[in-house]
Structure formats: structure tokens, C-alpha cells
Image (tube, rainbow, N blue to C red; front, side, top):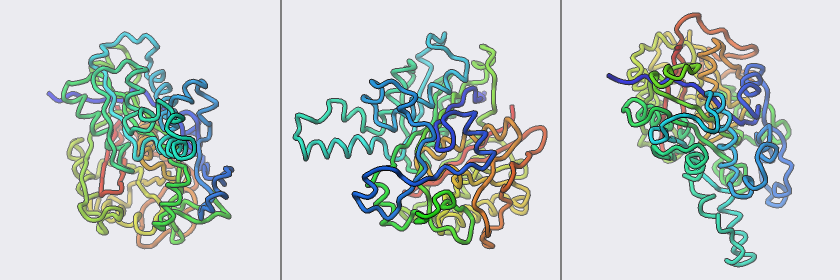
Length: 415
């Protein structure tokens, strides 16, 4: 008998909220997170893009100095979100659990880019003796998973998914497998990213992937708008505590929703561009719904990948049209990167938190900056005020797609 996976804890630190309550409230209100970067390195490197969506609450205001020194910013953000999720699930510092059956399934797109590049600068300018001994543990992509395993006592495996901007959602696929297979009773899952650094910004600009609306950062991320000109870089982390239903019931845990199904495919088309007809995304959505035992007509809301790039938004629409048919007109779609920016590997994690809350509260967050919707993308987009979702059983789909042709989809349902 397949075990049911339920979500019992949520944590997040994002550009529009340093914890889940503020993140959710601001997502419903349509709060823009992008702003001009106040760092000397912007002018020093003459960056073509001078804005991004940085954390609403810096980790320096939450963590101890020793933690800031020994963790890359990506690890710091993961720590902040994980502590909130752990407490939200009702676990204390000395939680009475079987730690051998507690696992980590975590993701990132890039890992410790700040540590890597600052270490290289130190080596070049000051020599090898001045390189920090903790450099490798801080820069490695699995650093966050390892740090969380150490802090929370997860001995059932600390695994890392690295699939670009699909990492956060693909981590849910791994978590679901661990619960269903009986290999774990509790999984701490999520993803983190801290790549607001001159090199990624310069590289994305060279690809013509980022918006250059330096004079109006808050209006720069414009999913589905005819005037969209690229994504806005963001940072942050999202974390969920997922348990088997039996484990959650036994301890009387509050349950937000079920993680009902996942689907993972690859385009095999291009290293950065999505397959233009959305064929890989279509297969991922269909696989997730089949895994959840649902028909497309049962879905009421999609939290879309919707990066605001000219070439990226349309294939996702074509995939949704292929999966939902005429029902796509009834599906309420939120493109929340319009508020948070694009958190790369962490985007699916924070957007999954919003998807779970949409199931739980029956509301869909708003999409901002959609002034002139692209007629080639005639989706039912939530704008202005949050959308009320149907009463009773609700099913919500979360899409994520990444460089390398990665497609990951998760389905959450009412509990």
C-alpha cells in the first residue's frame, strides 16, 4: 500500500517576506520585491542591470555572527527557512523522533557562488594561506543539505538535487519517493539560492535573459505582458516538512495539504531555451496528475513558472492548453515571480509554499505588472485581488522548468 505524504511545516525567507506569514500576506497583496542594488560592485563592474529582488529581511538580522561566518549566504537562507518550518511543524530542539528515518531532500541551482568567487579573489590577491579552511564546505552545492542534517539530526540521508530552476520542485519528487517507499517518515525538503552577485548578473545579461528596466525595478518582472523583456533575479529559500500520514497522525500534527503527486521530465532540446511547443512540460504535468490520481478538470489553480522572458512564457501556456484543454479557461493562474523575482533553484521551493497555502486557505496570490496581456497567452491570470478558490477538495499544480531542459511539476491537494 502506497503511503500518503502530508505537509506539516512551512518556512521561507524571500524578497517579499522574511517568514511565511509575511510572505503569504504580501503575495496576496501584490507586493513588489525588486529594488535598486545599493552595492559598490554594481558601479565597479559597470553592470547593465542595477536592480534585483534581495531578501526582505537580511540573514544578518536573524542568525548569529558565527553562523554568518561559517555558512555561505545560500546556506544561511536555508537555515533561516528550515528553522521556521521545523518549529511550524511542532518539533522542538529535542524532538522525539526516529532520526534514522528522518531525511533531507534539498535543492539549489548554483550553490555557494559567493564563497567560491570570494575565495578565488582571496587566493589571487593574498595567497593560499589566507583562504578560509571552511571554503569547500561552504561552496559545495550539498552544503545546505549537510548543514541542515547536522543541525536537525537527520540521519536518513541528506540528498541534494541540482537541476537549475527546477531544483526546488524536483526536490519534492525526491521527498515524495522517500515517504512513499517507506525509507523515511519525515523529510525536510526545499531549496535555496543566493546568486545576486556580479558574475551571475553579468552572465545572465550577456544571454539577454534579464530585464533592463533600471529606471523602474518594481515593474520589471512582467509575466505574460507584451512588454516583458526578461526576468528579475531574486534570492531566498523555502522549506517544507513532509511526513507520512501515519507519522503525522500519531503525533497529532496539523496538516496543511497533501503532496499528492510529482512529475519530472527533460526536454532534450536546448541547454537554455525551452522546447517551443512545451512538450516536455506537458509530459511532466500529465505525469504529476497521473501520479496524484487526478484528472485535469479537478485542478483549480496553477502557480506557473512564468519567468517573464519573451521565449519562456508561451511554451508553458501551450503545455497547459495541451493538458487542460478548454478547462484551462477555468484554472486560475498566478505568476508570483512578478513579485519575488526569479530565485533560480529556490523558485520552486518558495512557490510551492504559496501553492500549499493556496490549497489550505482557498486563495490564489496575485500577478502584478500585467498591463497588456499577450494575446498569444490567453490564460486566466489572477490580477488585482486574490482569487477565491472553490470550496471542498482543491488541487493545485506547481510548475518549474530549468536550464538543461529540466521540467518538474508538483500537485498539492486538500487534506
